[in-house]
Length: 283
Image (cartoon, rainbow, N blue to C red; front, side, top):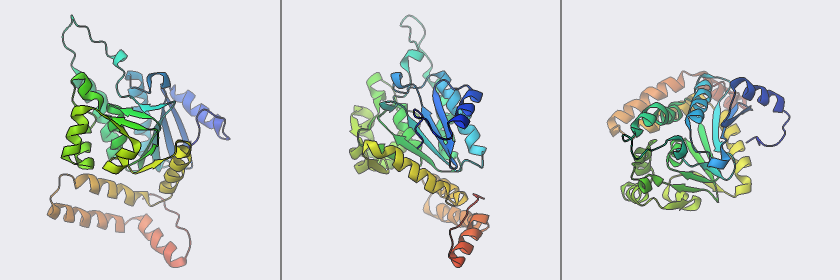
């Protein structure tokens, strides 16, 4: 994962990209067919305000349709991944009418979760520190989650009398089971990276100083793979959450038919027969 805080050979190109899109709350990099999105409000533990929502949405939508980007990494700057919603951006006046928190969920968080889960390419989350509230569930929405040993996950909603959002009530029971999901959501206890791994919430835990390299290697590996087939795997696994077996078997048939007609499958077979490294195009 390129280090946004250090000079790089492609720094000029990246700086132009940032300048063109006028980013205030995120850092965006593109390298070796991987898009790196770094939440960049470190003093606020990268919590979301409206500006960050708009900037993240703009970049993610562009990468969804950009064939040059074949894998995406989401991470945070500083000591946190994301602390969820910035409460300072949401003033609650005790003398005013109760706020409609559902509006921000509908306008911002739900579209972001849908963008991540429906993006037709792998999305990796590199959790570099605390992931709390919506931040924890944004991480869980990603296809593969790699966490630093010091990272923690907190379903902090219950501490404010709120309900887990950003897909939390959907992802948690499917990842860890009903009993653990209830405990995590109702108690709001801090979960260490190692415990999250044991519960099945995440894919991998690595030493803090290895998170960047591990994530970069993983993303660049996936970017070289037959990403059209990976997109079908992603869709099939998400569909399995609500499909009965008979329906899922039919879906697998249909997706295998599509995969078998792809250029990637043809290239994979030819490369195997010719004993060479395949050059996949993602279609």
